[in-house]
Length: 150
Image (cartoon, rainbow, N blue to C red; front, side, top):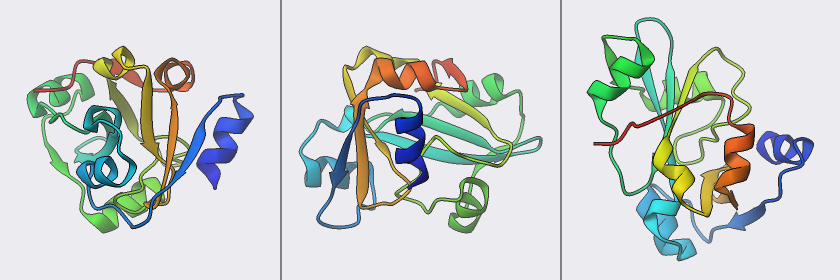
């Protein structure tokens, strides 16, 4: 998987988590893996007038669309449809990894994530997660860090 190879190439320590079923939400990951919902990071994709925006936030939070518009410098944003998510990221919904996205996108991660010690991100496959330290995530994050939540 591209995500795992990427983390290895950056020298990041991580753990692969195999889930017994394909999760449909961050709540499913919480139930299947048993970690707190705020540690399950969800990756959302928005379509804007200039470029797509990939947003990463804790599983128990909601994005504040007005903050997102201001940070992304776009007036019109909407959630991407499943086929758009796949086209933009190369991943399907439920398994979107915020790394190794080859299309031109703006990436924004919520700053509160770095208050946690351990986080879980998508690997590119819905049934496989990646657990890593938030400080390591911060080291390799190649986007904006901002306050995004309501």
